[in-house]
Length: 215
Image 1 (cartoon, one colour):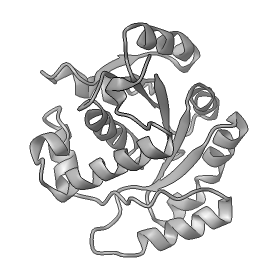
Image 2: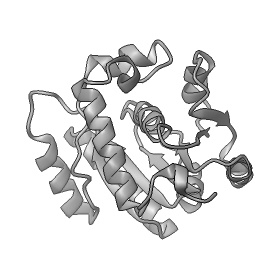
Image 3: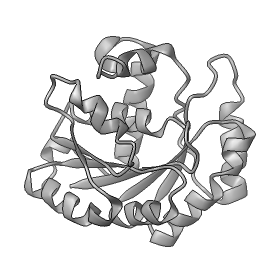
């Protein structure tokens, strides 16, 4: 089982939205579980309204994360996503240590980017590979990549080449307990999510489809 931790220091970075969309994309080829360690339980609330069985969502405090991951392995999950609470450094470190790969999520605004240093330090302290992804970028502003590249240089972090833009379908789909690729499978939003998951899977050395990976 491959495990990914999505980490953001600030609330509003779109971390949970991105986690849900990546999980739905990954679930196209195998069993996927989201472990929701955020006390707000937004991912779990989203799952409560779904009819689709995948991805499944379980809630647990960060202190019980190892047990939750073990249960996921025993259930046959091929991929697990850990959705963490913002601004909780101990919980983020626990998630980073448990993960195979850390995705640091940030909007491209200067104040957002200035806040990522702690999260990058956490992932590095855990000794795990990481990448910074620009999320909720303005669709008519081409500065997101440049801002991410500058932040990557400043903090010594790899920048994911896929930018996720701010699109109405993301929030509209979540309100229906779905994701953009389920509501509008040919949309730009769906294409960005698919490209991000393909890049992340390759970067994390998922060389075959999740369905073919051993637990």
